[in-house]
Amino acid sequence: MGAITMSRFQTTRWSLVLNAAGDPREARAALETLCGTYRAPVLAFVRRKVRDHDLAEDLTQAFFLEFLERGWNNGADPLRGRFRAYLLTAVKRFLYDQHVHAQRLKHGGGLLFESLEDQSPASEGLATPSEESPEATFDRDWALAVLDAAMARLRAEAQSVDKLDLFEHLSEFLTERPADADYGRVAAALNLRRNTLAVAVHRLRHRLRELVHQEIAQTADDANAAKQELHELRAALGSAFRS
Image (cartoon, rainbow, N blue to C red):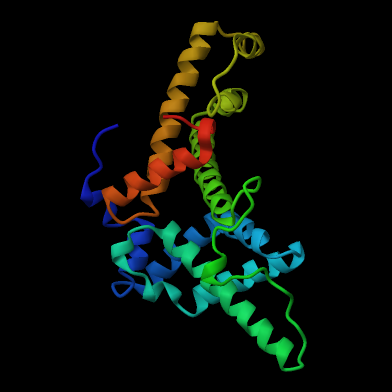
């Protein structure tokens, strides 16, 4: 794909948030969209830090309410460039504050909120070798959220041109290379020649890559940040997505 120009990032969702002083309502809407899209990786991270899954759901909900209502976005550092890094830092701080509050209640004789795993900086990255770290879980689920958002847009595009049935049959081939037997099965189901099917898959994969790049651009404020996000997305997904 061609080089990404800086002008493309002037109206991305994350750049709108960083420039909230220009139009706070527009920035709020952009932030709400980003939070809705990337709720899953935050929940996955919280679940790795909290023993109780119901509590993890409650904490995730509370985090986003506070994140939006208290305007944490106003303290975003534009030099950081990436919404993913900012969001992960914010949820870590939120959980640490919840942990400190719970400990104060415990020692003060009040009701214990619920024991969280140690959130102190010294505890970061101490997962056992056989376990995925909470940060790695967050990165993987973030990458999957990007891919899901791009796939949803691709599906909508197919539906708009009356090719939804073709998309539904070929979607399984877009993130994994199909085997010959799979090609034959779908070609027979759609009454298409195998080479025609292969061309359709190639075109959809190409469009999916474009949409993934667009989704990533929405969470970055310049080309370098977007390029780094794309690199880390590929690393997090492994063989699930290769451009």
